[in-house]
Image (cartoon, rainbow, N blue to C red):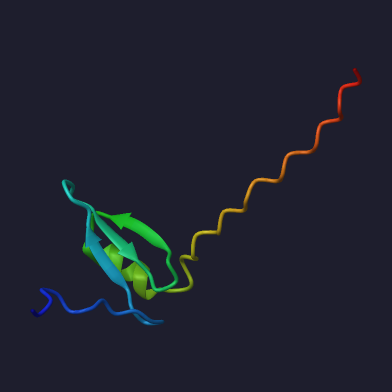
Length: 75
């Protein structure tokens, strides 16, 4: 059985454009993982092709610091 769609491309020069279901918006996804929604496809492509001048990947969330141990209550 053959797949319905070819495998997705990846790499340093692969940008993606997704239609946001139920809206008139397009989601631009840069190869650096930066994302932004647009109504105008021309603005979308301008943003994608200006890389890296106008966007950067989202920062990786840092894990919350470990809670400090509480002193034991004397009995």
